[in-house]
Amino acid sequence: MDAKTGPALYGRFLRGLELSPDLPAFEAGAGTLTYTETHELALLWSGALTRAGARAVGVLAAKGPAAYAGILAALYAGAAVVPLRPDFPAARTRQMIDAAGVTAVIADERAAAGLGEVLEGRTDVAVLVPDRDRDRQRPVPFPVLDPIAAEALGAPRPVRPEDLAYVLFTSGSTGRPKGVTLTHAATDHYFGLLDKRYDFGPHDVFSQSFDLNFDCGVFDVFCAWGAGARLVAVPAQAYRDLPGFLAANGVTVWFSTPSAIDLVRRTSGLAEGALPGLRRSFFAGEAFTTRDASDWQRAAPASTVENLYGPTELTITIAGHRWSEELSPQLAVNGVVPIGTVHEGHHWTLLDERGEPDPAEGELVIAGPQLTPGYLDPADAEGRFLEREGRRWYRTGDRVRLVAHGELAYLGRLDSQVQIQGWRVELAEVEHALRDCPGLSDAVALGIPGAAGTELFVFYTGAETPPVELARTLRRTLPEGIVPRHYRRLDELPLNTNRKVDRKALAELAGRLLWARG
Image 1 (tube, rainbow, N blue to C red):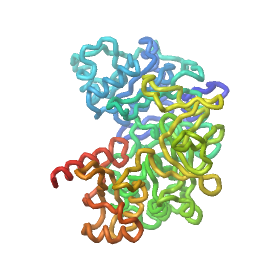
Image 2 (image 1 turned 180 degrees about the vertical axis):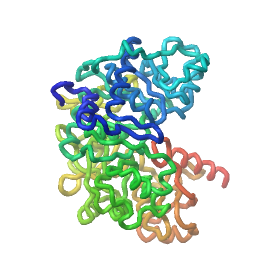
Image 3 (image 1 turned 120 degrees about the horizontal axis):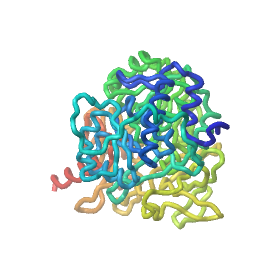
Image 4 (image 1 turned 120 degrees about the vertical axis):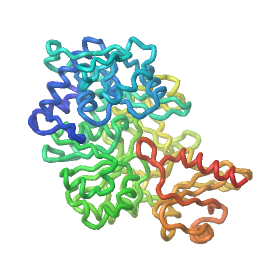
């Protein structure tokens, strides 16, 4: 916590401003601003937001000045940041605007072109479009919020620890987005721990591979800004030659989902020593295999490699494991790198199927300062929180195992077990066995309803392999009853908007294929 700004998340940018006033705060294609320029722009825009009385500000922009300065402007105004994806359907964006109580939106000109459909019939949401060409005098179907230099704030507005810093939306089980609230106190604790663990500084250049509406994107932005470092947006085409992109931009800190590793591998970007400039590499968002960790470490020999874990409800990440070629594979379960130890200052326990503590294995539940105060819709909290031992706990829905050295190993989601002809099948175990099949690069196993009950369906990448050969190989390690019957090769596994493997899309495809087979 900074003595001047208290727990305010924007205090991290002010620290970066003091360290690197004339250095770039971010680079996104042609959009680059220094810390000083970003600060002044945020003060100008926050004046307009303050005039509008905004308490929750939607930031609807691609990575660039409108997005990054917009995030800071919302925080400077004492409002909560509500990052929105410009490529999301209008109906979904409107749902999020309504749920978060957004009354002001900062949008780049391209995103603003689609706001008419999002805000149709709404007159209570004002829109600030920084790069709007006013000379065209093109009418817009929403109230326009124009910044006025005389109304620019002289300094960010003070906030309380319990005030909201961010509202992040995750996919809800009801089909509508579920809004998770994060406070300044929670982010202050989180980034304070990261400051103790890492030595980030103005010499660093951070990748920004995550979209700004994804919780790990908050890690990128505020770790970089808190260190006076430069943030570099990673365009999709960069993966065609990631070593060249990282070298050209001087990137020293990388963070992505593990799915990016196979993307780089397929473009021959993981050759030994191919990523020499990296000194820290982070992965989160899905299971991180020992194969991927080892391959990345070989390509980035000067980098520490870490697996980070945490649901949005626990403020970005809540546990971490630092990869060791000697130790980590011994602690791995089903070929997945451990998620490590829970952050200090938190309480955690494992619960069995009856909801009773289990010292060895069970659902991970966590209490502590990074815990969200709740969802925007209280109905979303049903079954997610526990009150016990005088504390409020979050049920992660993840099954983990306590392994050596106090580390936790991820076993899968509670709902990742399926019943196949009486067998209780761990999908992670099947996927681990599949990755050991010759010629396969990656694989996903799914339990799909079929005519004779649940059936295992496998999608894989790599060499085309006859199903009979795959089944023969799997029988060496799996019981006959859980050897999958259905296999389909794909050129690549589909990714969702957060660049995780899109299991929902694969399940829908598997269902259609099974139906077509009769």
